[in-house]
Length: 458
Image (cartoon, rainbow, N blue to C red; front, side, top):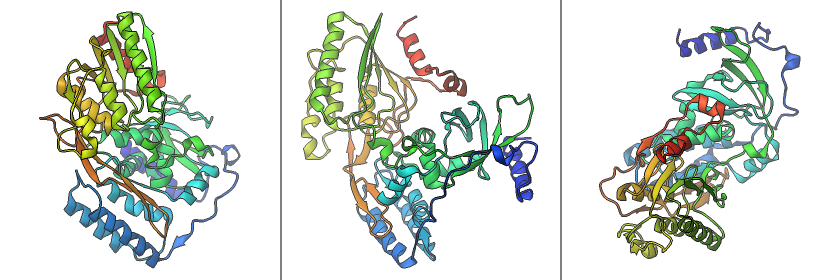
């Protein structure tokens, strides 16, 4: 019997016994941790107020967004369909769930629809959220961490949550996640790492979770699904707004390390409030490489969603051997400093370069990866990036007047000076490395291991 049939059969059984009988695989009620209190019911917005916000939303989507990778006919059809559903009052999350797939269909990684400031305040004040760390493999969902001690063994497969099959949950989350063009890597990547907030925002605002699981510790081989109910967790660390997924990486700390035979440089963002400190760090690091005679550099760009031109171009100038332009000539005039050829710094690295990349890489990071790929600089290892040589940004933020939903949208397209690369699909690594469930459970880093093998490091 397939996993999907097992889930359907089990969920049907739960529906038939919904009067509360405790079955052989269900813990007694006294062992199930329940939340201490319930949040008050969400306020409903009258139809006329929702229609006013929708009119504001539609005007922006059709008239102000860049729509670089958007099918405009499809966008208009989605807007028409959503508008036709505005026939009765909705709460904030219901309205957001109606609009967010439309924002996702802009296919722009800089465009987001986030909850209102008031709902964010409530979340941060202690709304219980899903407490388990998860990873997604295809249409299957697995636990990799139980940081809050809910008694769920890492490695367990989640077949269903609150009566919804995991495959349906994954599909719904992915349909609400923003990314560039045809990319599907970043929606999965973001959904894994911020599952708690995204599940609450797009799926279900429950404070406890009825789960159907496979592979629990102590289960005998061939044993079927097991039901468990766990309480949500009040923790601000679980709270993440849609746009916060990338904007909260500002000032993520960069680092360096020297090892026998190679050096490691981690740059997790290209957005820093102290640019001079960042520039001095790079200068000292690359001067150190030269003085030590280090012949191999591993540059870790994983988790880097991008940032600003200056920090990105500064790193680029330490990686090139001769002058090369960064931005293409048809970019806005204010990017003129980076449209001209960028000269290598005196401390520029000339040895073996290995670049680690993943699905977070878009915006300025996607631009840098695209340039490195185009010029054959270094060996790229990891997963395809979310962004490539062209994306839209110069984003603006507006608030829908009645519901308070916050809409960020891009207004202008940008590109770097490359030719022949496919648009809207990201940068393909030279050596692709896929993570497995065993890697996460063992806390292994197969990408770094592949990089060390490529560098000839034992």
